Image (cartoon, rainbow, N blue to C red; front, side, top):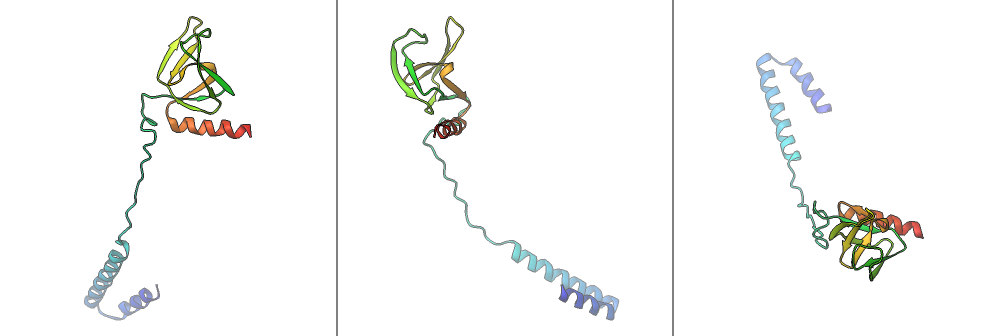
Length: 141
């Protein structure tokens, strides 16, 4: 800034033709300095894709979080059906199918069997389900 003030004072003392040349030189120097300082090479950014769950963000795939302390998988979408397995609160499951029973209750099919809607919360992607699962599990402690 001090240099610019000095140059301005010098311009006031010299003739008009010389002023034009000096102003042009000053702008050329400032432009050159700005060009070299603003164009530094940036390091490459590496983006790592986690493909542990390739369907985590698929628009046509839903995910469920078990909300009950213990839930029983059923062989079919009925309360009286045989037990096919068990799951616990906070588990994240990929929805494989849906059904509505005679009592108009929604059932969801998972790899382990059928669960009623009253035992799960459904989400549009796995990351939302993971957030809720962590919240459910941390509230237990």
